[in-house]
Length: 113
Length: 120
Image (cartoon, rainbow over all chains, first blue to last red):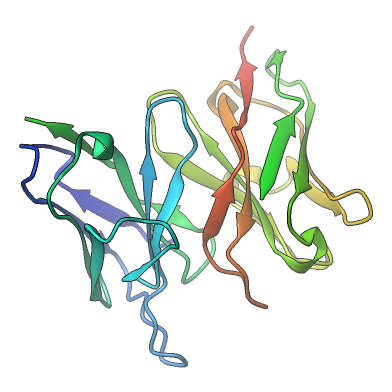
């Protein structure tokens, strides 16, 4: 199974500042056939299901604010939340869909400082 | 897109349960569907997926031999049958629609989930 490891486990950021979350996969999730990284990011707010933010490592879902951006390739990925807003307080998960079982990172809790 | 799970309840260890997920707002028969669970205070864990016509089903290791995923495309419904339940199966069970593609993709939309508690 591909193990996904996020860092940090939590971070506290001032409103308007940038939050950076890292995700590392134990195996490459870049496909040679289409040159795409099979990596997604989700946001989960309390008492809600996870919401897909980004797929293919950097493609934002429709309606997701452009302050959310994903980057990276291969085994190392980053979710950046620029100009943090109060509504961005949540737990963020990375997930690989390169192979089954689909696996998630342990989550990063983002709070307002 | 709407996904509504049902069937979650309190069950004793060793018991069985059948979860359902009613889908609407999209062409159900076109998409892979997934089950994901989340234990209290923990991250999501993928459970199973089924392709659009039900001919391919994959399970997490913990579900092999105990869980059975099926779908009824005529009724736009996804099911998860679970047997020999253990305390560690406790959590919220979500169904999720795949983002799309013949080989399956990531989890595009999630239902609100149904809670399962396994305890004596």
